[in-house]
Image (cartoon, rainbow, N blue to C red; front, side, top):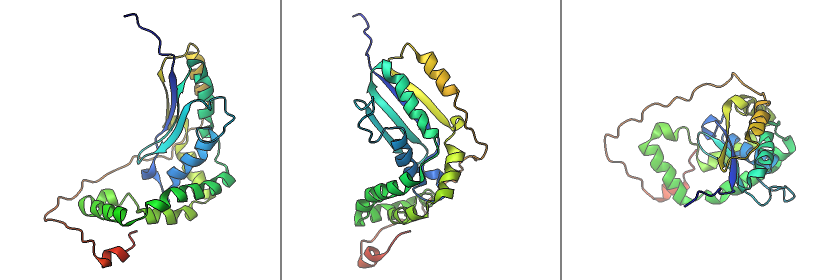
Length: 220
């Protein structure tokens, strides 16, 4: 069989900062919302890329913004949109998106997830210390002020902490796209490596009781 071009491409931007970099819980997640709107992976029905599969997601280590299922001729446009993650976050948008994040977290607060958080605390306490409870994450949204946003943005939303890559068919103007990305020049020297200690070995069986006392306990 003769190889045929797939005629489909994707453009991704990965910021090397997720929830483990939060000084206030949910900062990275809130950034995903605000910068995701800024680079049009959320909303913007009038975008020339509104036909694409586009989204953003936050993990413990990274935040990902992407356009997929686009024609190769539109990769340059996708790159131009993704460059907008380096624009200073809008303060009014930040306050609006706090409500959107709260609406995501609120329905997840229930006994089932409380038990899951309790299990992690017993089995991997050091890992759990880095993951605030859903209640704590929800309550912390009000603490994400302009100073927190400014510090997080200047430290992590920089070109030397971000990777761009193209998937699928490589467009004919790929060199032009790379040159455009290379002209962006925000950098930072504030970052420090993440360090994780080994978890203690369990010496005895651990059990979680679903009693009334636990039901009333608010985990933080």
